[in-house]
Amino acid sequence: MKKETSHTILKTEHLSIGYKTKKAETVIASNINFELKKGQLIGLVGANGIGKSTLLRTLIKVQPVLSGSISLNNTDLKTTSNQELAKLLSIVLTEPLTSKNLSVFELVALGRHPYTNWIGNLTEEDIVIVNKSLALVNVSEFKDKKCYELSDGQLQKVMIARALAQDTDVIVLDEPTTHLDMYHKAYILKLLQKLTKETGKTILFSSHEIDLAIQLCDTMIVMSPDKIICDQPCSLISKGVFKSLFPKDLIVFDDKSGSFRVTK
Image 1 (tube, helix red, strand yellow):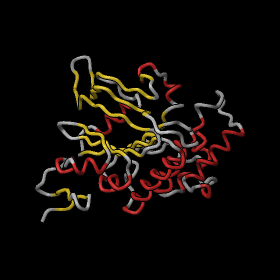
Image 2 (cartoon, helix red, strand yellow):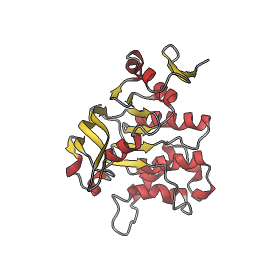
Image 3 (cartoon, one colour):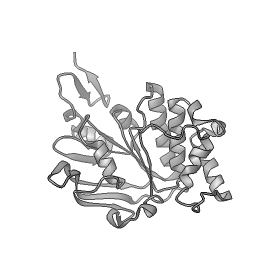
């Protein structure tokens, strides 16, 4: 988990995303072009229903590309097998955990599955990596607890530890702050920022916490009905990108504070 020189790790070219059936094709967004750098924290933001989850599912190869391409480490995702992908990209989804009866250590150890034999036996190296992952997110003290004993915030940290144990170049999280209070929302995103700096991994997350993302992210992908822009938060502010995200009858974006406020 050493930090390396920054380079493009994930790239999309003329990407179109959406849904395809035998009868029709529904395009959610098209002409998506961006390059994500190694060792950065990237926030994916936009209004409800704009297609953030669809984009994430396409990037992790759960949903097929309609057109265009996605490359990971300069390799087209279409030619990457699921087994290879599991060693390059790890995911943290919002679906309820089905294995809460596992201990924290056991759950995090599942991240080593791409590297273990078919029985799933852990080597000494695997155990070291699991313990290091637990330490990185400050949950070592919970390693023997059952997952059902944890709070939502603690469980989210454990899920991040599992992704770290998978030891991939890229970690993708779908709304990692859902169901958390204001403090723990900030805590989790600050933790993700810290992990990019300490591990050199690229972390991409979708979120409704736009104000926090502006403060903490190196890069942001902003989805709007007419276009998708990828840039540094300060550049997005200067371009007025956030002002067009929502109708102005209720909230407006304040350039000076870099945050949204309710209209009077």
